[in-house]
Image 1 (cartoon, rainbow, N blue to C red):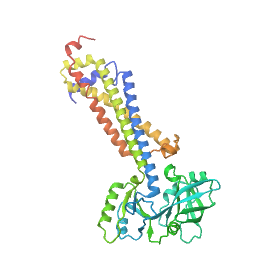
Image 2 (cartoon, rainbow, N blue to C red):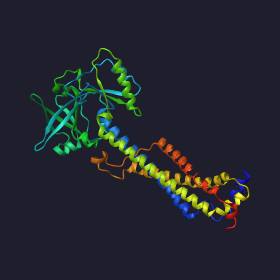
Image 3 (tube, one colour):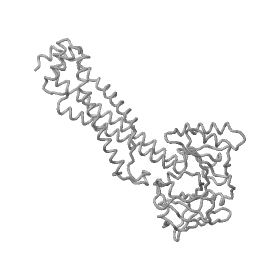
Image 4 (cartoon, one colour):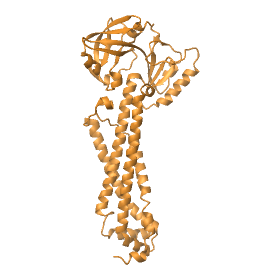
Length: 412
């Protein structure tokens, strides 16, 4: 070990303030670091929780990518596309793709004894992945979408069921209005509650054949095709790859690719704003932690000014003296960071398990504060915070360079 460094540590250990900063400044600086790290970890976990919940819900309604007629909405019933597109096999073979699902839409009116409501009816077939709707089912079951049923089965949202006072097992009529009115009778088999107010309050799910019949289409005509991606797939990259496959295909009518974030821009704009808020919180917390650590280290330097003068008189360089103080300060920073992480992870785990803090789903799209713990992000956060605070702690080194041994050794 360096002789001067050993002497410095020995003198420190014999000082009036064992173990580092003075008691008051140590508590303030340590608590500041712990609270800052705790807030940042919770902010990231909550932000990721919102993104995960809302993206999964949006994709559950429509899939991550949609193929439909160019120049029209994905819910069109005026310009169908063909079901047997030649490039679908190549898209399905993509490693990012989980499944491909045909769909058809038609607007309708549903009424009860004293209420009337416009709805959007979505038809799906036996290839449809019901995992999302099974996860948000409130009552009953998902509909049987077999073509052999004489009376169609439907799934509606809890909001719509409450509005119209419908219950599972009820038979209800849907009115499809065009040049003339087409009436179809359905049996309500299930009620779901996805808590996306703008979407689920008007969306009804039934069989594809029912909607094709109402639209006057044959079995090869669709509103579009949903592409569901595997978890962790990059939506923008996958969209680019799908577009390239379509552009290189020959003999098929062109179709347009729409991403889920383009289909529901208000949801994803809200998530972008949430990311910005998290960034602001992180910058503020790092600033507070760094400022308090600098203040604490400066207080320590003033308290130990006689020791600094003695070390200089013994021939120790400014860099060596600063290294001793920096190591002591970083020890406190690491203790604070560990404490903050532990508290944050405990609180996050409790919220994730018991959903203690509720939210209004009308405003937040979920009924509780969601949590998703990304160990990678938390690791980068801690590493970045440690590096930044360490750089900020270099600032007090300018004070050490100005300490004069002749003046400080007279004071004691």
